[in-house]
Length: 196
Image (cartoon, rainbow, N blue to C red):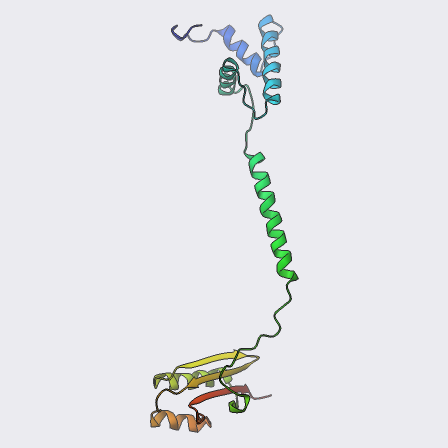
């Protein structure tokens, strides 16, 4: 068949040959045996080819037609490309997790208190340390004082440094709680819970 001939509908005999080539129909006719031999050759060459591609143009056309007709039941996947990548990712993840668990645990990290000596720390025992520390923070911040507050081992610590003089109202509130700024204008109060 040359490229200029018109397309004709396949005959019953052609359809039977294609069904035989597909392995759907086994017949003892010579055309059926020919289709079975051709099928075996196609399947063998396809399996032997390095990437499933055949270099012969005629055979390529035949394979295309066979795939279009459903003769070759091949399920292609990119597994040969994704398996090494997924394996490398799994190994990297396993090594990373192992290394994380091999690292020594942090040794009770305490907050760094720069510029304050232990002697300047005021300690107050109160029923609700977090609430009292937050209340003092709010009072100081309303007066324009920068305050740092943090929790460590169940005790709340409040740090502040004066850049200006406090209002009389704030001074009175602090003195009611027994809190005083140091002569250097720094304040560090540790609010401890009252032991039960």
